Image (tube, rainbow, N blue to C red; front, top):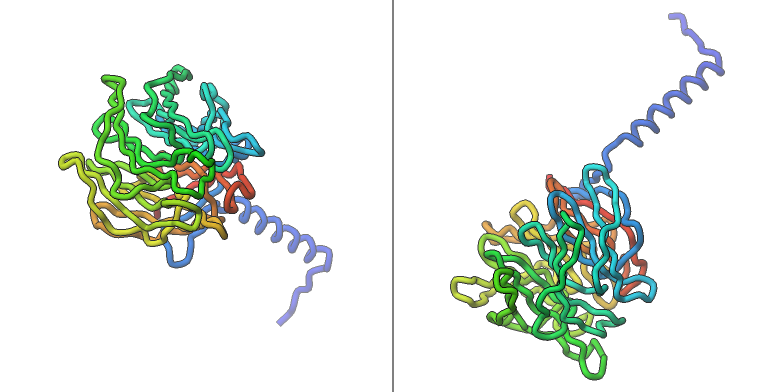
Amino acid sequence: MDIVRQPSSRIAVILSLALLLVAGLAVAAPAYSQSTGAKGSWATKSPMPAPRNEVVAAAVNGKIYVLGGSFNGNWSLTRNEEYDPVTDKWRSRAPLPNGASHMAAVVLDGKIYAIGGFVGQDHKGAVDRVFEYDPASDAWLALAPLSTPRGSVSAAVLDGKIHAIGGRVTTADGDWHSNGVVATHEVYDPATGKWTVAAPLPKARDHMVVAAIDGKIHAIGGRFAGNDDMIDWHDVYDPATKSWTSASPLPTARGGVSGTVYKGMILVVGGEDEKRAYVENEAYDVKADRWLKLAPMPAGRHGDGVAAAGEFAYVAGGALQRGAGDTTDQLIAFKWP
């Protein structure tokens, strides 16, 4: 058999072309990575215009809005930035009339409601402010305040009304490690513009996920005092009976969590304790009454905002370490398989 030998220069060219082809394929490959033993995948999207921690996020008409937060000694940012998943781009919108971190945000009838928050470091300076934002007119409106100032409050919309649940008040000594958490549950009716008192949580807590699905409100995780006082509690409010009952606990007890309703499930992501930020991504399947372990985030984080639009649940900003350590501008997106 005759062996055709290629000149070394031709071999070099062929190898170079092969390497370029492989590199091109690598660049063109999808950004999603499947996590071993867990469902779903994560992708990196365009970062926010600036890093922010302790933000909130909301989705309206397929776009994601990230509000407020803290960064570099400013604990009451007024930033309002809009992300368009179609173009993968951000733009600035009308800022909050008054900034805060640790707010709650919900969407009702195409408008975003920003509720409560803190304006000082270490959960100081709780506020009772409530604002309504109309993305169509890019304008804010001040509404009736909460009954008492509180930050790290959670909220959900049920039957056309806004439920603001739990949270933390600023204690007299200003030490956020000392109690300060509340079981308060109050309801805002846009028709009357007033807040009314509803059945309180079975136990006071803050930094939890609150979500409404299938006609009930779920309060999940959180903490009852300091960063190490994390809980797996899962309580469900039924408006028909105006009472709370216990449900399947969160698999990984943690506070500082964020979450949203996505694909008929309640996502609970991230969190922190005194040692680290959590990568956990767990989802509660309401109809099956069971928890699912999903693909963990690429890195632990807390204080982020979470909102779902289309095929993705978006996680914006937060801190990659406990406290305000390594505050990020990252936007990552989770996709159910």
